[in-house]
Image 1 (cartoon, rainbow, N blue to C red):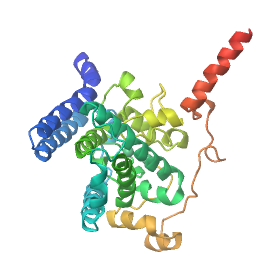
Image 2: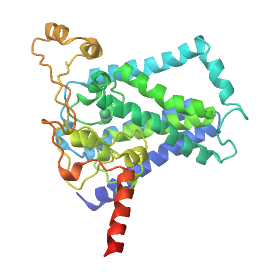
Image 3: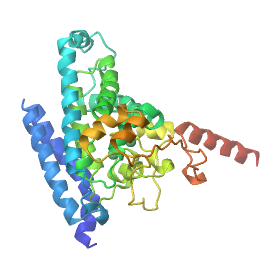
Image 4: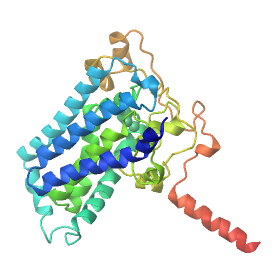
Length: 337
Ligand SMILES: [Zn+2]
Ligand SMILES: [Zn+2]
């Protein structure tokens, strides 16, 4: 890698994210949020498209996997169903209940804070819902059925960003937004939260050689998300954060080691290749699956630490609580000596 690419690898993640935020911010300030958000989004997609070819992180992931159309259709169907949900909540009058909560004097939301501080609070609070939606999708078998669509890919690149079963998307958007709405966050904060999630999400899956340094402790970077797509449960059941790593740090699922993660990503479960089958799959029984796809073989739901999925000592979960507790026990020990 030449010097220019090396320097670029440090600048790209903060640079692209920052630039997108500036473009979106200009639109928010000039009453054209949708137009400028879309300009930033298209700029990000095009940049990543070229960067992935020019300086890929994993050359093996440049090869086609036959899933482009399926990923695009999942993106459309999950985005579409989220829009329908908003429309539907308006139609049944849910919005009339929610709107008063965003009014002054009604909620716990600190409206007198500067906007940037409100946005940080909003992203952190929504992230709690997003974190648990994602973590439960890995720990509860019926939720995993839907989330498996996202993990069935064998390469990472920007096109995987929106590849979610629509049920999976609906669950996480409801949990993420419910917290913000219950706290009475104003629309301005929700708008910023959505833009940040869109930009970070697109970056998270990109196959570009990037370096992150201390950013890894705060944001969900592509470096951290590559562990999350590992076939090994002690690497894959980690880094659930969508934008921020704070809840992973607190609940012990943060994972970042110095060795390079395997390029052979994916999952043990079977997933058909066609979009329509992938949409149907989570709803079917094993018998139905076998009838549709004769080569289907059921795999029992694996849990980290069971006989088939041992966890090495260095990879054991360490929550912030246990880390703090261990600090105190070391102190006590030292004091006695
Ligand atoms: Zn996941
Ligand atoms: Zn992913």
